[in-house]
Image 1 (spheres, rainbow, N blue to C red):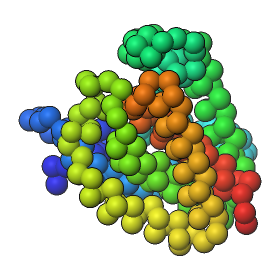
Image 2 (image 1 turned 90 degrees about the vertical axis):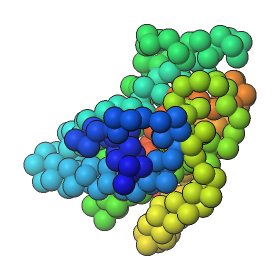
Image 3 (image 1 turned 180 degrees about the vertical axis):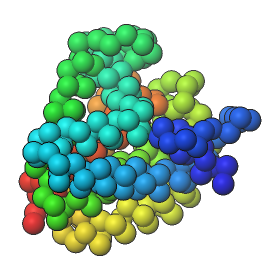
Length: 242
């Protein structure tokens, strides 16, 4: 249960807390629970989305649902997204890109990335049909699962949370943990399978960008991966196959 508590403590603001005796690699060992935690996050967001749509017009309900989403996750992955936008999208050498990504200050590219992400998610949530609400749960679960296979890529930074995650993750869990998001996608039928393909395409794009710019992954890249996949999966349920 230690690893489950660690997963909830890292990925959510729920009153679980992290183990006091933190050990190197704990974040990676907790990776086996990441998709399940994602499903819990998605379930809470889905519940909020259902209730808010009963009380407010669609766009306001979508925006407020996104606010709930950010509160539940503490904006953890948004920080990685902003850092990656600042470091990966500008013009610089790989070493300088990593320095920019470590800088706590928000740059222009980071600010634009956050605004676009908020808009895409808010619009997607406002347009999401009531019959496709479970897509929220799939988006939260499969995006966190993709962190696991992404960790197989070389590390661009030997320090930080990304390195801690990679050091503790057992590769076998990548396949075992895929059961949850893929099983949910199967239950959702053709839209679910289309969402998986969309998530895969988004993952390839993000990881390809990271490889091209810094020759590997970091904890920030994992954060960007989660945010981009969540947005793409939501859009797939809005504009994809019916």
